[in-house]
Image (cartoon, rainbow, N blue to C red; front, side):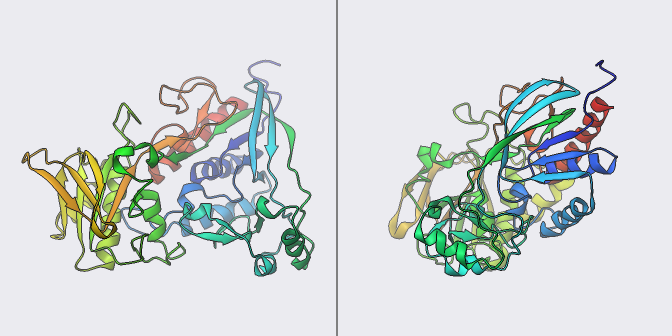
Length: 412
């Protein structure tokens, strides 16, 4: 084999979020066989968990559904959910990848009828809602799930309840003996679209996220505002379900901080502007205070920030709050100093939202990482979306298209 004669022209895409989906369909529609791996039960990644995109504030399901249809119509894309890379051997054109699969306990015969969920009694934390709610131990991951197939939680496997759930399935799709497994694939190029995880807010001890229920993160805010979220789209205080009339949005919660994430996560400022818009849409008399170091709006999205600045109920405070203290009635009290006025403040709020940063998700077998854990652009490793850098959705799609082009070049 030479560099111009790859042993395999198949392209593997690791990660089924918006970047991975885009890279997969672009490569497949260019004439290449593609294997798409996703570690969770469904495709869509973090985008599927969003309420709306900025700046138009439209729902993300339409864009995802278009891509799902492209996958369904393609004969070149093989999708494996509940699957991760265990090992990678070889080099460009001749990789041998070991794929590990986790048990789903529900096979492809599932028709998503929901009979299994009707008899389930145990409730488990709902990962789609970031643990803000619970689901039955037999559940559909979310309303727009792809593949549209139920999952049985491992907590009931091997129990009497598990057997009851199995018996309720009219098509015999539940396999409680599923232990997962592994298999090997020969591929010519690998695109790492492993996405990101929200920086752990519990690490920000001064902000008391783990202690105060009315201190939440930006991704949790997104689920609260979503019609299919834990509160059916109503933004409320987690402690008592009351409407928040005073809301603080704290920027750079962990980002641009040498003790946590040293880099700017790019999307946080604009996401917080979106959250301010959510609050103002629901509560005409609500006050929103935005605490910021700098407001960063890339490209043409500056107009989105200016729109919020024109709202008399939205106030901007140039400050990095020092800490959050518990106040009366469960109200968190934001404490710090205004950088412009030198005023020392201690402001109580009904709800505080931390704009936590984007941390790249680790993946087994990837090489060429930069100092922050993102896939470095040079060399044989191909990163797409937030695996390569902090990006918004549109930038992730552009990055994924570029990654597909590079993978095609390598196997051609």
